Image (tube, rainbow, N blue to C red; front, top):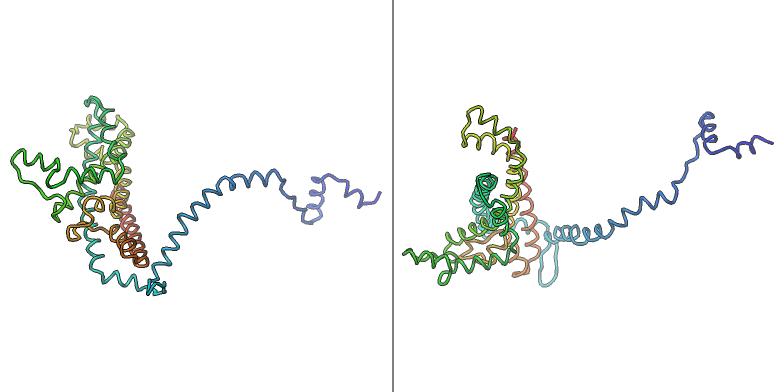
Length: 320
């Protein structure tokens, strides 16, 4: 029998070894059909999600980017380059909305997070009875829909028939124009947001508190630390990861503020509660200036990203 016939009858492993000794490249084996099916199965399961993500997330974002460089002129869409972004720089209403948003952010976020820390420490105390009941009670507001609780506060803060003014007049105090005065309108939005979102931050802090070992408090007490010193030197450092998370999330949410001013004040009085989110909505769905609204949306996204990155860097450096 010839050498050719002998090499053809060799097992595949021996052929590969012989090819390796002779310096030749061994033939590549195709993966079996079962392996290809196993690799394709996860992609088939992910395909619906990927299609929905591309269709309802990626495409709108990219389309809004192209819209931000266009303008509707005489019913036709025309490319105007960066004219919409330049228009923002000279738009006093945009700067008013930005200032209102930042004022609410600077007051509401520290107020809410400070209150959440106090509540979390109280709900974590073993001296408190009915702890489970209070934990659920403080978390209930976050479950309520944004529009629903906005309507609730608009009824509570009504000038003539609101429950808050009823309580004030019952003790001899004057009525407060909660929703019609510029100062009190902002205060009303801050109060409503604090009531609605404090429970969420409280639950996050409570979970973080329960991860702090009790031995740390015992060691601090042994060293002579009182309750206040334990709070500042044990509790607050232990809460830093949760504080970082809640600060960033609360800042992002407040910069995108829309529901509360839309339901309570409509951006008034005299644009005193007009936020960037409301201005974007008015530009798109009241003025039908979708190109300008898209530009506002991208500028808002840049502001949110910049503020969030700065906050994370500052808080991490303090933690170190």
